Length: 302
Image (tube, rainbow, N blue to C red):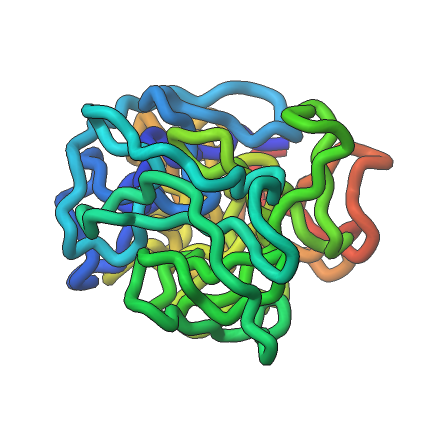
């Protein structure tokens, strides 16, 4: 398959922000606030788990401002206030309550778990949600097994499912209630949410987003391609290509004006239409494709 260039540091800027987006905190290569599905906490690169080969790129990091769109999880220094509860395991709260992430001092960092009553008229999974006591304060209107979060670079939060743990702190065995969602660990913390998969051929993501390879899954993320992002365009970030394209390793393409990577189309194995010099290559290894994703491929060198 292909070496996919993934986000390099724990931020939605490393994942890539749309040009002119008011939540952007700097040029690519700098770090802003944390986002669901972004990459490692130590600033090192990650690779698509189901593909051979590796990709290497460097990222730097900086502290976010309190104006950033989505809060990160762990502040860069200082002591954390004590947790009232455990948001990962949903323990420590009374009946009818749930443990949510909160930013007590409104500095842009989620700094502890707090107990809040579950809204009696809670909205369903993936539906738009609202913070009932101010953004980052914790109180929101999602169900007991979900949290109100900004994901994918959108400007509207939605209810995101919490991971299910087979054993307390058993990170080797986590799953999602939704079979079409995948566990995604929030950056710089042991926090796990269930992010729904998308179809890179159908591009079934909300407006201004695309279906991109994020960690070991295909997830919706903000389209950060701007005026670039077409086939053959140099890229360094997961979502620096137009929706329907991916940032592939330069070595997997017949020509690329970057030593890092270039944009190339996803393709349908049953109706392939790839640029000259490439062919439609199965995205998943034989037998590993999830149900409904057997047709997904990428246009790569033969």
